Image 1 (cartoon, one colour):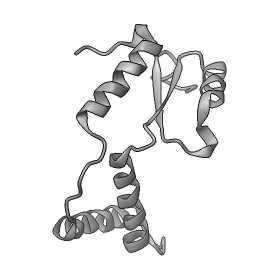
Image 2 (image 1 turned 60 degrees about the vertical axis):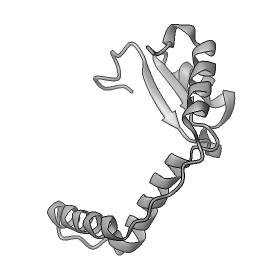
Image 3 (image 1 turned 90 degrees about the vertical axis):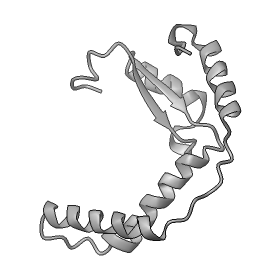
Image 4 (image 1 turned 30 degrees about the horizontal axis):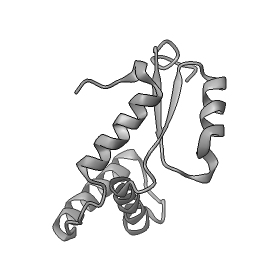
Amino acid sequence: MSSEPYKSAKTVFWIVDNGSSHSGKTSIARMQDTYANARLIHLPVHASWLNQIEIYFSILQRKALTPNDFADLDALAARITAFEEHYRQIAKPFDWTFTRAKLDDLLARLADREPHLKLAA
């Protein structure tokens, strides 16, 4: 937040999950007190799409990046790319539980809280 482009930005949105280190109104106030242009946005508790991303990175870490014994960044990049190709072959689709209607409702509630941040429809 103290370097560009964040320092001079009108608004910087920090999108976070509901982890205990940054949950609730106290975390929002703490962020805005520290950085006037920051807006802390908590994802819905049932952000199933985020959980899927976290699961993928957990699998990547356990299956491809441990132990962390890469000779250089190129070796690390090659391992990640190889894992991506492998995972595409074995991954299975999942059912979303957070619907478009729920997203629309969430966005409307956020817009009501901060009218100056309304998103274009």
